[in-house]
Length: 455
Image 1 (cartoon, one colour):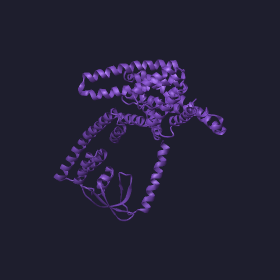
Image 2 (cartoon, rainbow, N blue to C red; image 1 turned 45 degrees about the vertical axis):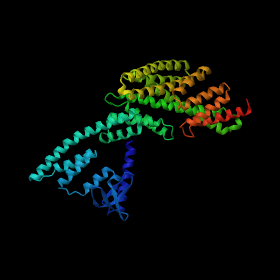
Image 3 (cartoon, rainbow, N blue to C red; image 1 turned 180 degrees about the vertical axis):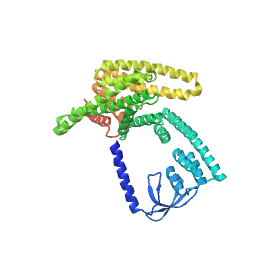
Image 4 (cartoon, rainbow, N blue to C red; image 1 turned 180 degrees about the horizontal axis):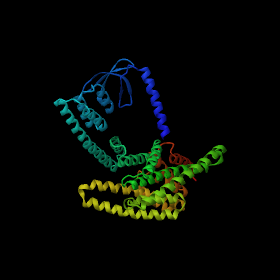
């Protein structure tokens, strides 16, 4: 990391030297919110924006709304004389209002350092002292506000808005434990999205949570451990999809896949199995740590569901079913609790209904998992019954349609299997190259051939 930073610093220095050599007359750089950097000089500034003489030629009128606040501060400061106490106090107050607390402190300290002996100078230094106290107070208030907003958005599953608020909090306090943990957990949830960019967010979340769980977070270490378990659990699911697709492809006739492709896919399968086992081991260990800690009560259903999934990856199907049934009992209790709370506290019914909705989705996920285990044990009737409930609970759960199609294929119910495969492809939000989508298309081709041939 240090070498990488040193390299970046060297590159930045080289670019700066080049910029100075080619734009010697450009006193300032205008930094825009869209990422643009415009070297040049200030022509004029007012409350609405500024006119900027571009080094490349021509003048540019820009509204402050399009300029980064830090750039506005720097440009404003560049227009002030060294002894302009009134201007620096006004700049400091503006910086406070825009949560540029370090810059506000810098401006106020400049005023304190002026040595004028007249009454106005003394009054300005007193005002600067008052601003410094205000900075500390408003910094603390702003940090608390952003953390509170982020937590609320997170609870409402508004993850991008939560990320924005945690980002603002971390600008104020870069080492804040709640902000760093929240940002990592948002990455985990965004990484669960069915999109090509999801996997990169998931890996980044896993990396950040791994680091956080080993730090002193003021009592939040277990939350980081739990997040680390969840991130690796999700990676297990993604590798399981890939493995199932590779097995489907390798099971095709020799005429459908040439020898070199078969060899490459076999090697890919070996690697995917290795990664699945690694992430399953990590997830299982972290779930165990959480189960033994202070989060056990509130995290137990999720931990049991995760442990059931990890046992299934080891082909320990009876252990998986045992953990799954224990999870089911916890979910039943939670549903009773949230329904009762909704009736008892009608003014907060929306909160309890949201919690109940999450539990229902978790039950659907659990029954989908139980069905996949029963499928491995050739207990097709039980598997289909679980999948029917999973779909009834959450009709948008795409994986349940795919799994039920596999059950129906095994029972040679070709028409019903085709119906489920088509439904999966209709409701899924996974991208076209997702292993499950490819698998569904391969299965649909095979099923439609069966239906067409009347077999």
